[in-house]
Length: 90
Length: 297
Image 1 (cartoon, helix red, strand yellow):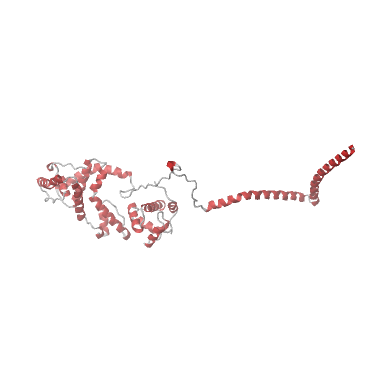
Image 2 (cartoon, chains in turn blue, green):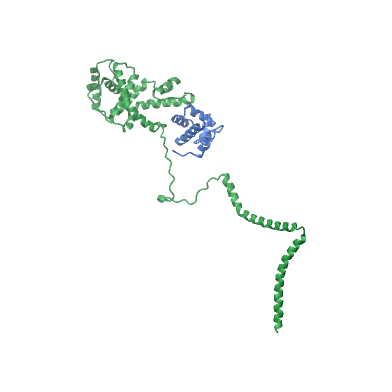
C-alpha cells in the first residue's frame, strides 16, 4: 500500500469546507488552474463529480485526465484523497 | 492455443452453427436438418482450415466483432441516455447517472466494452494460459452462443445451447470469481500497484555517502526552540548574577532588621578589624622580630 503525502493527510483530517481545488492531493498549481477554468473552482465541486461517477476509480481517473491532463500518479493521488475523505466524512 | 478439428458430423448442431457464424458463413434457415449444417461446415470451414490454420483465428474474431458491432447499436454517441445506460448494463457494467459531465465517459466506456467483447477471445488467451484448452474452447462457445441469441434465432436447439452454455458457465464462474475476489477493488484497466523507488542504503554498492544533508524546511515551533536554546548560555550567567545580588540584598535586609545602621557599620568595622587585626598581628610580629633582632646586638 503506498504511503500518503502530507497534503493527503491534511485534506483528510477535516471537512473540506471551502478549500480550493488545489488543496486536493495530486492537484498542484497548473492542474488546479485548468480545473478552475473548467468551472471546478472548489474541492467540493470535484467531490461532486467524484460522487456522480459513483466513486468508480477508472471513470474518475479518465475524467481527471480528460479535464486537466493529470498523469497516472496525480490521478491516483486525487482519487485516493477523495476516497479517504468520503470514508471519513460522508 | 489450438482448436481441435473434429469431424463435423460428430459435432452438435449448435456447435456447427457457432462455427459457421465464426467463419462468417450464412446460416441455413431455421430447423434445417443437421446434414445441411454439416455440409456447409465441410464446405467452408474445412477448406479454410486446410489453407491457413493459425492466422484464421484473428480474422474470424475480428469479423465476428465487426458483425456484432453492427448489430448492436455501434455508435454510442447516437444513443439516448437511457439507451446508453441499457447498453452498458448489457455488458455487465452498472452505470451511474448519465449527466453532461459523465456522458462522454460512459460513451468511451461502452466503446471499450464493445471492443473488448470482440477481442474477448484474444484476451481470453492471456487468461487462458492458466486454464486448460478445454475451458477456453468452452468460453468461446459460450460467447458465440450468447451472441447468437442476440441475433434472435429461435430454434428448438437454442434451448440446448442455453443449457450447454449454463452448464459450461458453472465450472468457469467459480474460477473467474476466485480471481476477481483476490482483487475486489480493481478492474482490468487500472494497474492498482505503483512501484516507488526504494531509498538507497548509505554507502552500499559503491553509492556515495551523503554527509551533508539538505536543510529541511523548519516549522515555527523548532525555530522558537532554537532561539531559546541560543539564549540558555547567557541565561546561566544571568541567573548567577541574580543570585549574587539576592544574597547581597538579603544580607543588607538582615542588617537593617536590627534597626540600627550602626550595627551594619559595626559589622563592616568588624570585618575591617579582622583584616586589621590580621595586619596588626603581622606588624607586631614584624616589630617583635625587629627588636628581637636589634636586641641581640
